[in-house]
Image (cartoon, rainbow, N blue to C red; front, side, top):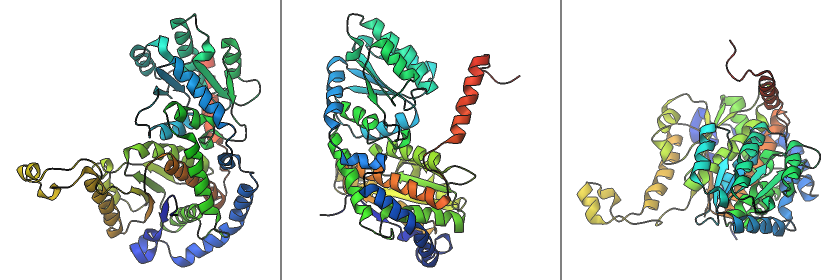
Length: 434
């Protein structure tokens, strides 16, 4: 049986892209340095001691998640997912797969008053519910949206139990979200304190919205488990895709100054995955002056908006292209219309044929311009494939943090910004300093 995804870093080596790539000798040094941390990681996974990923071995919580989703779907046509960052981006990435969602999911992740007003004006509040998500229970943006949206929902159907259409998620203990839940008499799902928000996609944080969208949440975890199995077959990490990815990224940074990494899938449903990965990578690695900046791109859109820069601009980037099998898929162009348009090269081809040719041409162009390119491939874009890629990127990010000597699980600078925002609100300084 073929592996659930493929991973190829040969396009990042100097023998492929010249001076823009890494040497086998320098990579061997990186792999040797990574072998110890990888041994620890393999041990933690084997002993179910890495909660964000060992969660994928569990199934006893999936029935409860599905039951909650069914209860919400029964009383709601629209469900607002109220959360920010890790409380939202993973769920958005999963639900982008849905073709016929059971309910209309709206992600409210920014307290823009105009956006919130448009949301309330666009839905039937009497058939709208909410899922309020905050790991700490004290995220200011989540709180202010919950405290303005949920009362509006309650006012639209006062005769019903709020527990039928509103649910919260927060870590155990006394916190603002749990106090609101007690006041509203709504259920709260526990957010595991050992799983940070950006690593929480395989918990109810990601899986409840996925279930609401009608997706197979068991397949999400199964795909992640397959990716973990694929990686942990390698004892020293040299053949583990996640270790390879982390190693080549950090070595390109060290030896070639590649401070930017571009993640470019060729499927619309995977663009939210790139946005999720952007947070995971940035917030986990960007510390003490270290890390690289991740740019999320989308083929073929960014062939027309960014590729000129990528090919002919500063040589300071590493590229990851996520490909899929596209040949023969989609509607086919009639030869008569192609001839009429003077586009004979499209005659008899499908939309998938064109997009498939473009993803290959982008890789070829980058390599010809001596840009380091990593290629990742999936045979299909579904719940299992997305789960596998997410598990890969979690492993890769943690290994990159080991290599950079930073803590993959904290975000001290973000906390500074939250503190300053609270101070401004308490003193009434919501505008620029005079």
